[in-house]
Length: 509
Ligand code: NAD
Image 1 (tube, rainbow, N blue to C red):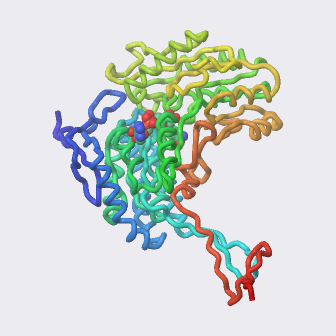
Image 2 (cartoon, protein in one colour; image 1 turned 90 degrees about the vertical axis):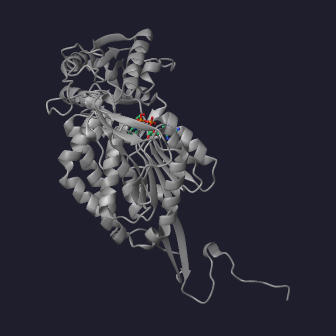
Image 3 (cartoon, helix red, strand yellow; image 1 turned 90 degrees about the horizontal axis):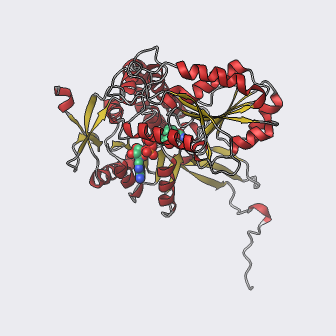
């Protein structure tokens, strides 16, 4: 073992890297090769308590700075992210297995979020609103909530942490962040970026570890708001816990069972391209990845033939290689889940069209990687809601093709028949169909003639139904990390009330 892999990386608490209270460590593994990328401390209850206390202690001084002064620290990070995109992109790719253009895009997206947050420091931060009473000034003002707990997933290991933290910090909150256990090296890198800015001690804290450390952040009484991005199971548990604690809020972004709807009026070049991107980019491990392709009977056979041809040949391989389209799955547990759902689809009546789930030895670049290829099947849509494989998120290249007949209303009905409501796309050349989809699809992120993946920070990012609850991400995160004060000031010596309410004090005399 090299010197580098022997080093144990610490938590970052109160302005320094610290070993913390726990004895246990864990390793980060490259999912493409099994190579150990580093060893990390596993956070404990005590570590989280210390981090939360540090964040609480730093709040007043940080809050007293202007937005513009706070943003200066973020601008430094922005420049580092821009200058080091190549290097950091490689770290992302090595640690989470996304092909290299996606690794770099993760860092670029983080830079965009930091730019948005730091730039927003100079923009108006509230509203001046009219009052019914001419002598009153009325405003909406924002204040930071206090300590923000951030819990993030592995699949966007640089972008999502900044989606949570950049605006939270510029608005005057202090943070305690737990990176995903699969991507602690990206966590370490981000902590080093913060340290290099000289941000005041305790403003940014990071505790490495597993779900138990995340749970301690949720349970910490001094945490005012929890931002969570990850699976629906964990997100709903967090939302439930926080709901029972008055004064604490949670904003949770979760998974989906997303669909691409290909209508009878679709351009099939656009449809096939969009479907392949939606289903196989990031090896199906985006929250917005599509595991359902709902295709009109008039175009079904041609679409199927063309989609299957690409699914058979899409390049799976070493993610640092620029010619790769799909890297490995994140971990062995996820490979097992993929195989379980593929078996379930067969049990539920799927007719399998592409089965590259177990790659041939010559296709898999390294026998220690978590390699899989596309698994595509056709299955009848079931109105009764009993077919699990078309309703539950697998988070892998597991794709159901479903044929529908009739009009756009039927296509949208099938699109909506899932407890999730994150992302979806319609492929059609008919604006009436597109507008029907826009108005009736139960989605937070809707796309027309595009894949259902891809986000920009200046748009809201989030889902409806089981997929989302508040926005911990992108531009809307400001609502989760600030409290609004309605502030009314009387410029007169007389007290006059709105709605004609009498301000006279009458007495018995
Ligand atoms: P996950 O829910 O297993 O883990 C997410 C984070 O929560 C990790 O840091 C984990 O350690 C922590 N955690 C686990 N149990 C916890 C608990 N009981 N209390 C507090 N924290 C806990 O998700 P994952 O496997 O890392 O990511 C994949 C999931 O994330 C998929 O469902 C995907 O759709 C979803 N996702 C959603 C979005 C979005 O913006 N909607 C973005 C990316 C990923």
